[in-house]
Image (cartoon, rainbow, N blue to C red; front, side, top):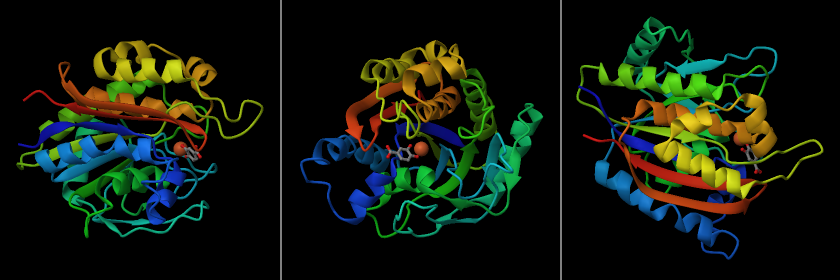
Length: 280
Ligand code: DHB
Ligand code: FE
């Protein structure tokens, strides 16, 4: 049977991609941020997953405001990366696993999550920056990737509680797959940031730390907040943190935090990273 080895959360700020392309990891601005990823890479090398399910939001590359699915699952065997306007280098194509995706789609829909299924899907910085942070140093992507895109852009967006429930359903979907696969789940985006309007640039470190603790040990705290409450504290784009709850919901209640790191600011954003290992 497929087994969830654990979950990773990370911000997906495009500037991180640029820093990697230009090898700025050891420079004063970036060093402390990238130092937070060493233990994550070590853990991933240790557990050696076959599949990464990447919960992220599309930023206007694949979906635009005219057609916006709330929840969209990649059901393809390959996903091309493209740049929706940040000037990022395009990274190598990601191999998918359509058979596994269709199993997830069937199970999620059976559990009343009526997702959009995508047999063609471009992936933007929300997907590729986290992948490059984990595995960009290797000659090939060592896992197959499954994009799970959540609308955090065009209101109304799904609630934090809905994301936690999606995670529960996703966990059941994964664990009912007959093949012996090790699956890691990424909850990407966040933490506090707002890129436009009067409050552009806000970062709330205290709230970010509370969110991290909630994802580790008390998902209910974040799940009970409305979209408006989250945006008031974390900013319009800070609401991306709801995708961390979707990852959390797929893990068992007693998943163990084996790494956490926070650094602010990176670009306009509070940058947090967690590794949660699933209880076996
Ligand atoms: C930034 C953060 C994001 O989440 C994003 O999608 C784009 C830019 C930033 O802080 O620059
Ligand atoms: Fe974003």
